[in-house]
Picture 1 (cartoon, rainbow, N blue to C red):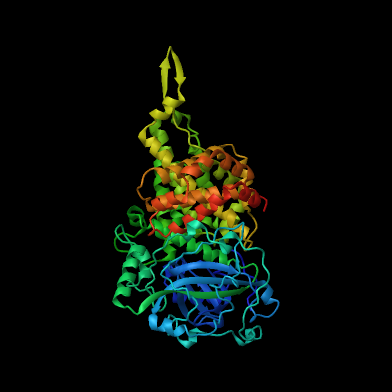
Picture 2: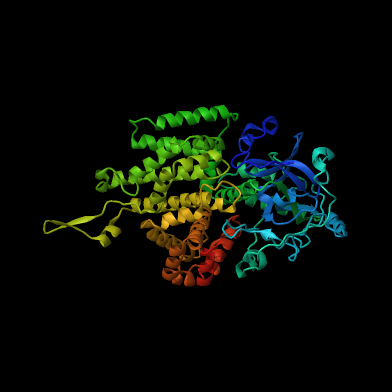
Length: 629
């Protein structure tokens, strides 16, 4: 059926499907394809159909195997949960049953109430399990992997397994069953037989006080059939937002108006099940990452400044990949000129950043070779943590320019890491340039050095650290704070590179324990962790003012770094528990977070669950248990 999947970006491993996608998708949509995988599909309209699942940066598609038509089935904005189920599907024969990866995607939708009521008479659920049944639910949640959070919405009905008409109008040709060669692998539909699992993780067996509270994420679900890409569709508002409109508030308005105008509509949960016949497939990892990336980007787009920078201005030329490739090559060649000034380099890096932010293909080109990655890290090392130009130690203006350049370089590197986990070339580059990567880690956790204020007393220079801290220019203070935030965001992205390997679904070239062992051996890490805790306390206790979208995303990244330190470094875990227990007791807790994070931010619920994990890891017994794993 489906052979072992290759890690990395698989869109070039099937020439027939690749050609089909290129013909049936707009160029900018085709370039945004993240991954695809052959699988068996089970849903309301698919009964064990052998198909390809195709993942883009905002939609999940299905196409036949071999491909004949392309259908959008789930928008990432509607996803509620993505779980890896550990079970023995009875419709699979051995050995496929043993190597199967069962992925369940739960997403919200709007349906007709009368259809929902009619569905209640259905006596037996046709899926191999019922996800609302706590006794039968077996969700694989790796203790060493990232948290697989899910939304909770009190408006959703409990009977989430009910049939709906959402996909009822799909043409029969789009519900192709397995080819004859694959039918012999299938048996009649029956109840799935679960194999024994270890004791479920705490998130799958109990609810925390924090997650039991009403942290409801407003949904933008307005589709009654399938996600569309028409200009009038809410799915398009992600790319059409500006400083005053964004996907989530517009989606809420559209949803509210539709529900008010049509009382027969109501929200419910739907399920899409993918059975991957492979133990090495990384599609689950890609699904999780694309969903998380979407949530982060959707939160940032609620910031008018970010939305204005992201959104295209004026009339747009037709999208052509060839033009993007030429543009990247030109920028790269100009950056490598030896006689470039700092200002010229800064302008070129900003141009590269803006281009990569709007065109994913530039990120792919960035990782194709290692020279530009090494160039940016080496250039960053010229300015941070201290300047190689000794004159900058006395010249505040020059040092401010260097810090500004360091910020832009760090932001650009962070952008290149974002959403590129699908690129096998990225992993190859990082593996080949491990020394460069570790030099980057040291730079990120080190505090930038800036000119100190000195006074002359009795003919001698007397450096007073206290007066030096107070006499720094407001510009330097602002630049240091901005750099610290960008360094935190980039460290978060690098942590993901290492932490994703703990899922055991992709390459094993990196390990999170390896990275944390290196970091804890670097003296600056103690001061860096102290600054992270300080910034979290400041963000949660400064005032009753709500956090901005960018601050909310930064808070999520800070909690993620703290969680990694607590979980994977015994030394750092003991340091945080011993030195910052009072901060967690009085400032870093759930009530403070709930006051500062608006419910309308998509990042709110994952941040809440992440803080819950951090608080649990702060308990000495819990921390000792997890560091031994």
